[in-house]
Length: 402
Image 1 (cartoon, rainbow, N blue to C red):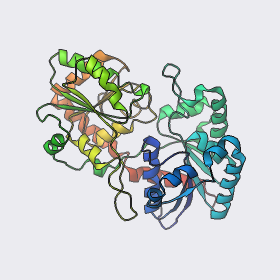
Image 2 (cartoon, helix red, strand yellow; image 1 turned 90 degrees about the vertical axis):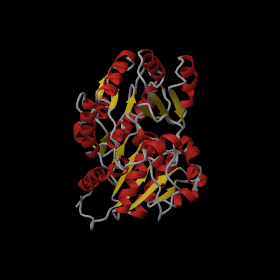
Image 3 (tube, one colour; image 1 turned 120 degrees about the horizontal axis):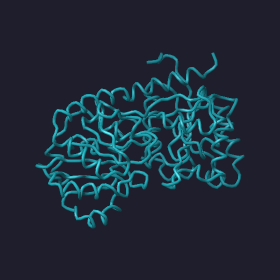
């Protein structure tokens, strides 16, 4: 760990709500909270509209949350120069030593106003740098936005790549390797490895006690390919495999019609997004992911994630930390965090037959399960938040003039 006596003044910027606990929000909250716990002065700037809606929530964070200029969204659309001037003013007034930006557009676009004034680190959140024509995914499918994102990444001092797949995206935008630093996403290994009462948790969720439980976690989105799950389940059921499958995440109820069509309502269920633990307070816990979600990980037997594209398969690492064997795809962001046959099993995206084969194999082979679980847990430990924050501290210090 870096010398904690040398405290930093860190500005941070996201262009959206911190309360909408998606991947980049979870990252931002955990990173900034841990930096603040280490004694650094951390100020997060968010749109004024978001701050006004949840003032009490933001005031309870361990780090300071500050609203951007009046009517941020409108100003960005019509008079972005005012927002950029405001950001420069705040930087000069508070004498920040480094800025942590999350999102190439629009946050990164605004932060370019600070170029040459203070070191800027950008961590993208996925759809700002990744693109896939078949999935109709990514801001860069819009040529005008792609041009802005290209200018933005070139205006940063360092670009954090969660995985090699993200590094490839930066290179596509013409960024040299000297600006790219690979730092993975974090996971609180201690929380995920705590024991929980398996039967009690299953009973609370109305899950069968006598069947192997397959778990999938993530929001419903075409790129995650959750629509394959009912089809996989149907084939497993047809082959006589005994199981129950729970899919947890925002808008996963959109799968219910397909679950009914595939006649697997008896063995596949969806649950909505599980929010953070407790109410936030500077003196009490506010934790993401929540304790309820971690308990579901801990009571499952197998984790399956059929995504076709990720920046970083965070839920895969969470599953490993919770002691689950993993089946996922040989796709960007998934293959980056799983070594086939060692920390998990990889299949071709969209291959129903391969998923069925590997799920059936894991459910029947306890030796393989334990091998993957042991290796997966050791791999998850490399992503513990304390180690990840160490890497960010070291990066910040390397950029600050001595």
